Amino acid sequence: GPEHVDVADSYNNLGTVYSHLSNFQQAKDNHARALDIYLKQLGPVHHIDVANSYNSLGNVYGDLGDFHQAKVYLARALDIRLKQLGPEYVVVADSYNNLGTVYSDLGYFQQVKDNYVSALDIRLKQLGPEHVDVAASYNNLGTVFSDLGDFQKGKDYHARALDIRVKQLGPKHIDVVASYNNLGTVYRNLSD
Image (cartoon, rainbow, N blue to C red; front, side, top):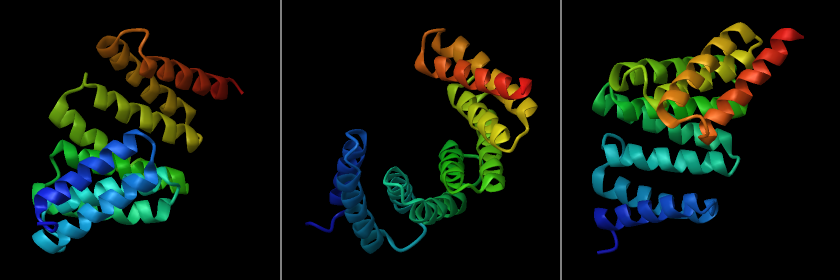
């Protein structure tokens, strides 16, 4: 029937497709329908599908520029994931990373740093020091330290990100180009 969890899964998948197409309103509507069904069928808090749905909605609200609502949903997702999985899962690192990004959009740089550090710690333990997601965490930390005015730390993190990205992705990948750009910006700030 229309309230079955499989229907929620379909709404969730549709929401993801709409997000990839940058149709964020349709994405939000589909993820909200999925969440509604998950909450009715699985209960209000402690199921991982509910957490994933909160996470998807939080990301879409961020894409729509509603960062306060994004923070609410992403924090719920993180809370459930921590309770259900514990602190050592990569999906928990993803939650910390997503929440850090929204805090950045809100200008709460201490919370940004704390969440990005938590994401990095988990990714290092679970994925190893040469994984591209570890590079993404280094990149994020390089940006937040630069935003906080600590350009030396920003440079160090961006250099680590660049090193991993060149090894894993090759010298012409767009993420490598972004790392070079970030490093150049930090060097410019260091020379001022």
